[in-house]
Length: 232
Length: 232
Image (spheres, helix red, strand yellow):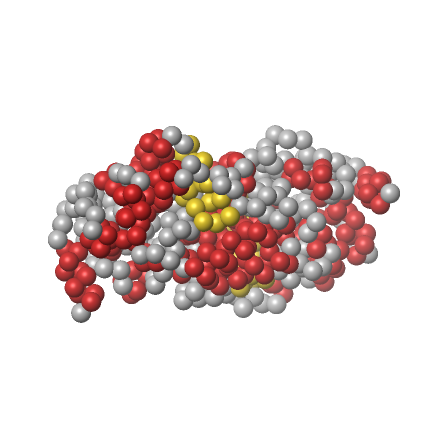
């Protein structure tokens, strides 16, 4: 099934791209610039496409992104430290972001004759991002079946939607994903900060998967304390 | 219910905006520039917002629109004359256009605290545009309920989805919609061409509604022949 992967350049979507490529189904990568601070992600996504020998399409959604204010990922709001927790991480939600990116990706898929769009949403995203849950994935796929009826069916693939992030690390390692060349940090410094929600989650995922994390962090040990605080 | 209307500046969406305003529910208008030729539509949408005393938000989706090639509305393909007919009008389909515009509109609705997004899709659109059918409207609303779960429910309103375009003319006339200040033509000349699918459909709708059409057409009588040809 000829598949386009939505690739932010983060650990999850780069691992997904390597996994789809290993199956021989990778057609190309689509990335979105909605004005996020961490443009390093996009460099990582571009490098992934080059590495895998497929096309890379960056979609400029900055004008739309600017209208969806209130999010720490695009505005000048301070990114909270610590493990993902509903209250502190709500400000990282961009209204309807996944649905917007997916509809554009489906339009590109139809224009290019792809049969599927794959997204790396995973179980760890569920409690805070409603548009990463299995119910959303299923409803979106149904919506698209209606939207393109008679013009070719494109499927939505979300192979990690029922899995924890650690399973993505395991899958990524299986396909020799160069993890050090992926970017997760919400702060966008020289190296990963090690303190924001996504850095803590990333570090924890490697730990749980029993895979060595090759990422340099500014604060490499903060994650243990953050997780202990969350569990207390 | 505080409502945002997606307004292209055409007869349908301007009539819808006047109808929602008459109910006291109109919050603002959102329009999309996806590189369509008929930018006159957008001037008409902007004028509608001013007339009704609400905000107007133009969303620049040209970068995304450029990727969705193959459509006569955005590319240099000749727009076919004559009544809408599946084969000739397929080239006016922009892949996934409605789904893309709606997801962005829902993001704006959530950011601005609106309770509904209204779209002027109607029965006459069904046979050629799958993303204008009742099944799509229902599936989209369900998808959005999942996408924004816990962040506020925004409803999709499509009051004309089971009605012919002539019913929109009737509804528009009831609320004194200035039809001459709406723009439908796909060709984007000085005045409406009277020959393209949307001009023919527009002229026919006024005829069926028994409402005088104040629109100047370059070819005011072509529609009768086009409809006769379709019915033959």
